[in-house]
Image 1 (cartoon, rainbow, N blue to C red):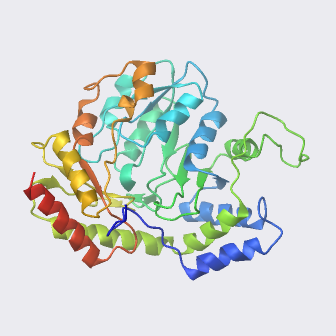
Image 2 (cartoon, rainbow, N blue to C red):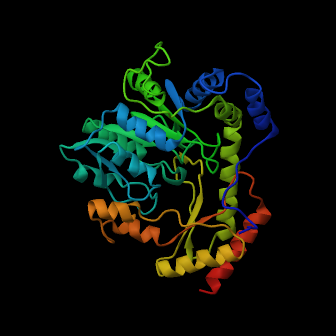
Image 3 (cartoon, rainbow, N blue to C red):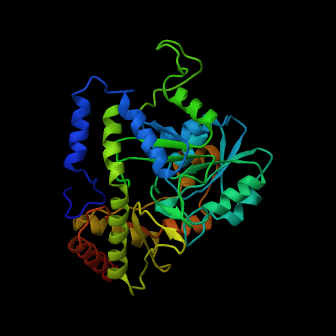
Length: 374
C-alpha cells in the first residue's frame, strides 16, 4: 500500500551517504577505525565511560543479561507495556520476566509496584524508557540500589532524553540504545551498550565477537560468544548521524508540539506532552482514545486511517498476551489492567524528523474525520 504520510522515515543527508561510501572504498569494512570512533563519540555524548557497538538493540540487551550472569531460576522485573525484545532477551538468558503494571500517565513501569515483586530470585530490574519518556527511571534505580539489584536500562527508544538534566543512558548498571531506521538516529541496523564498568564492558566486547579475548588470535576463543558485531559501514553512518543528533531531537520536539497544538481541545483523545523536569527525545507520537472507546472501535479507526493513506499503528499490544507468553507462563487478559486499558486505546501517528506542518494537518484532519464516523 502506498501512503500519503508514512509512520516513520530516516533522516539521511549527503554527508551520511559520503561517510558510508568512504568506508566502502577502504579495506576496513568491519572491526576497523570507524567502530572505535563511533564507540568513543557515543560514550562521550551519553556521558558514560564505555560504549560497545552491536548489531541491534536486542543483541545489546541480551549481552547485558550475559555479562551480568543471569541464568535459569533468576527473575528480572520489567514492564508489560513494551516492544517484545525487552522481554525475550530475559527469556533467552533462561531467566523469568516478572511484570509490574504501568503508570497510566508516563506509561512506564510504575515504581510503586516494584518492591512487592522483589523475591530472593530477583537479580535485576529492566525499566524501559517508553516512547522516549524517562519519568520514574530515577526512582527505579533508587529501589534497585536499596536491594542491591542490577539495572539494565532499556533506552532503545530514548536516545537524547534527559531526566532532571541527567542524560538517559547514565542511570542503569548497563544501558542499551538502538539505531533501527525509525529511531532518533540510525545506522540502518545497530545498537549500543553503555556502562561505566570496565569488566562488564570488556566482557561484552568479547561476547559480541565470538568470545575472542583482548589481544588473542582470530581463532582463539576464551568463552562462548556470538557474532553481534556492527560493521564499519554502519558505524560510519552512526558517526555522521550522531553529529546531527541534537538537531534531530529538536526537530522531533517541534513535530510533537505541532501535533499537540493541532489536537488541543479534542476530548476524544489523550494527547501526550513533554513531562515536567524532562527533555523528551520523542521516539513516536502516540495518542490514546478516551476511555469510552472500545478496542474494536480503535481497530476500526486504524483500518480507516490506513485506507485513507495515513500509516498508523497500535503501539503496543500487551507483551504478556503474546501467544508464546501465554503458553509458557499462563497469563490471561486482566492480569495487568492498566496496561490492558492503555493498549486498547493507542494510535501511533506518523512521526519523524521532517514531518511538515501540512502533513500533520492532513493526519489530524483524517484522524478527526474518522472519529466523527465511529
